Length: 296
Image (cartoon, rainbow, N blue to C red; front, top):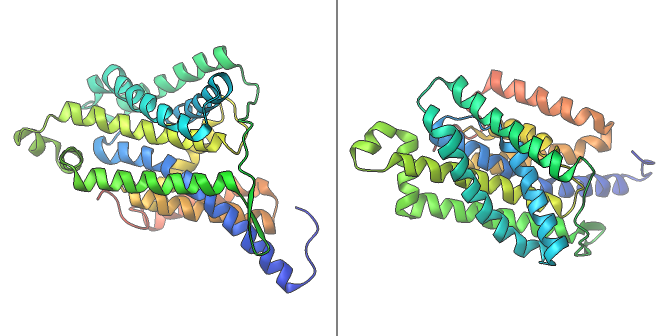
């Protein structure tokens, strides 16, 4: 925390700048949490591999940008496709056989995937921080300066959210996913191939996590362990917006982003995670279904 401004106008502008900055990051938090909450909403699986997958998205953008010279935002397309395929493979290998077992079985299965990715990632990349050396300059809105990469990341997050909504509510496959989420047995009786739908759903959730990681890589340094922080934030956001509710995840991300933006203005940044998890516990106690309710 630096020196405080003297006039009320300066104070107001500083607070507004912090809020806008947090809000833009909140969009990215939202799509990260969207992947986690989609998987929970469709198959009641808590994906503990969510954090490492976010980190893989970061490294995907970094490697394609550094080694192949691809534009960071074009690399997101490649990262999204790889994330989708990786998620489907993870589902088939680690989740499918235990999907009907007690919840602890799927929890342990995704935790095993978590440890495998972290182990392989640490061996391949070490824990040395990396960054994507890329800038879009800044945008001046009156007295507020906004980094261009954060504006584009927020726009990409909005487009991804809109695309997911259209997919889930305007396509046959999306309706299959919602049917399986509501009642898997009834969906199977209607001829819906639930195994394929579940694999696709897990793949989409993984894809969203990878995209979020790729966006984060354009403005923050990262390591293979960095995804763990965003996984924890995703849990807070998921509970805040309502587990199983993708739109709620986006709104929860915006709320958390604004909270992270404004708290450092009044106190040390070390208090941010404390406040986040206090909020997590309060929501669980007061409104367990979240601000917008659970599955939609």
